[in-house]
Length: 333
Ligand code: NDP
Image: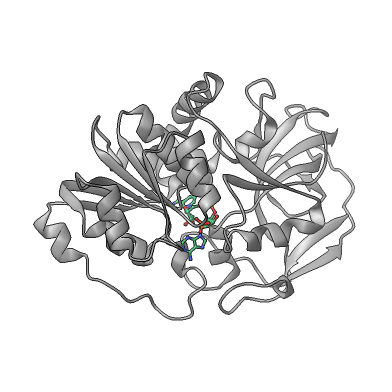
């Protein structure tokens, strides 16, 4: 039974050396427990924060202990009445092929709603992040301009599409020409910018947003954000969702001061963690499922095959190798 441990804390960009594979014996199943087989493992940018021991909103991973995160798993043996063999569950679980679990914190998935993997993406944490950040903080109105950075990723693709459903003009920023084409041709974004080849982001944003920017959904930070701030309209809203441009930095970020702009534009800037909205998850997940089932939201995944490739898939997030949600398929149900 293979497991993946945090071997060491990264300095700067993580490498494969920060991970260690180990075989761990499984304890015998006790009353109330289930044996889980991992099917899909989610890799997410926030895990980079947990690899370091800096203070954050989630506890760091311990060196020498399994890395954990969102996993969809199948109950393959059960001594639990509520989780019979064959049930599919979602939970925060260790990166491990098989897991003995007491059932606490696991939620049962209805396989009839959507493909199982969707519960780690558009119907799960990233989809909810897009939903709450855009609708509760961005509060987009018909005809307004919404800019989203990290636009071709798990969160960004959902943000842009919901903004389109709300009748907005949507501009995405992403890191390859293929992603730009995908956003415009497949997801119906009005404009998309490749930040790696655009030259001046200030000019590119100005050109793509002739009427200014009313809502900025920020997944990235850095120079992309600075360019957007310069185009903010009066009463603009900025949802600070992620700052991936800094996750591997070894020094504190420096750059433009945004406060004079916020003041002049009466703009609202708010950071958030998806868990802030936990009380409203079930309502939002239902609405997202309805949009997916009626094809109002398109969904893309980048699925890497094989347990041994989990670290590689995680590292790819920082190189932009994924379009849509990055997952690892570990086993068939
Ligand atoms: P993505 O699927 O968007 O994957 C990460 C993407 O970020 C990559 O594909 C890459 O795309 C882009 N990227 C990587 N490095 C940089 C960089 N230096 N500058 C600009 N872009 C970069 O991940 P998620 O959708 O899961 O997450 C998106 C953001 O949202 C992250 O910052 C994450 O931490 C945050 N988040 C926040 C949550 C919250 O509760 N606040 C919850 C979930 C996610 P490209 O090719 O375009 O460079």
